[in-house]
Length: 466
Image (tube, rainbow, N blue to C red; front, top):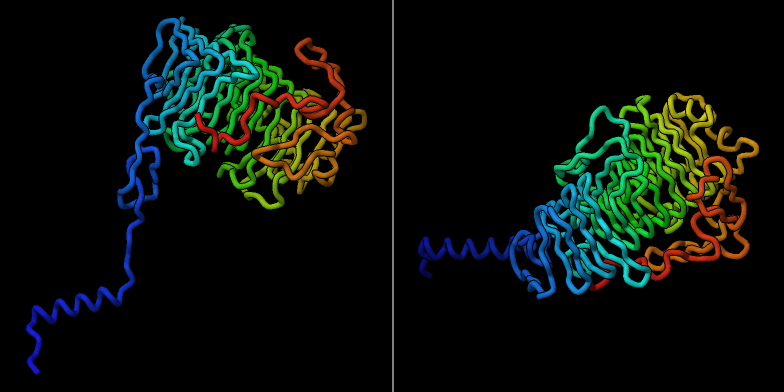
């Protein structure tokens, strides 16, 4: 038998090795971020799909310098930072759909002196949402909405708004008017521009009380659902659905009023910084800077991850995290399903509570692993303070004690308490709540006999064709 030639032997050896070794394949998928089926984990390009630009789609970029109207017969795509400049008003008709471009991190910024008139209706809400296709949307698909006003804050100079835009906020006009957001949905916002620099679903920088905020739903935000940086703006009928970080974050001397607010959390979606229902600071250092952060809340329902599932991310923290010298006031509200119900954090915040400047009255905690907490090393009695006689606060061991339909569904929640629920009574409207802003109701939490989310909200924006 003749021996193989060296070249033939080498080929046989390569073939044998190829058979012996398992195949090592790169993950195939679309690697083009501009495609509708972009896969950030793909290593080998294939199968990209591109949505042709429909004739009714209008791309918006740069600055809006004169009064402009967006109409409901068209759809709008925000590309990069879109600014409404001082002196200009952007009016958006009811039923209009606006999408944020992911590759350019589309965002809408209303500068000081500008106005946004986004006045939808219950049957025709205005929708800001992702430009990704059905089934491929996620938190942080675009930036979000930022409104900057000329109301007071407690910083030494007017700050640049969080997240990266070229916009500052602040002034001396507590009644400043930045426009109207009414029957508006904001979905899949919160893109990160750089580490720890995300835009929230709705960011309010020193917005004044002349501004109208009513019937707003922020869903699947990649940072906070709502954040106030100073200002005096009031709001009613707010929904925070499945945000990543905090639901309602209050800083820099915000002193507005809110009535009827709901948050509902995704058990699997929480932020590395620790996710809370309320997070309230006077400022980042807890300074004694005026005006103090003293938002006044009534009829809030915070449904934490434990109301949806018995297992949830360990990044979830507290229903209320009151810290850094805040003087927040919370009344007639319900907090359920968090590891900790109420954390009074730090000696200055404890002092504000002791001095009756920080108040929690006629509120309910339920289904918490621990109802009360204080800062490490503190001996302040948070539980004793919460349960002070005459304040009307109470704590239940289980979420089921609230008389709600549980577990909550993220896509079809039943929000009204049942007929025997203890939440249907117990509200009081005295002290700061005697203000004409507040509707005097008998129930605690956001809902009585009426579900005010009906008709205009969307609990499943992932699977909605826009």
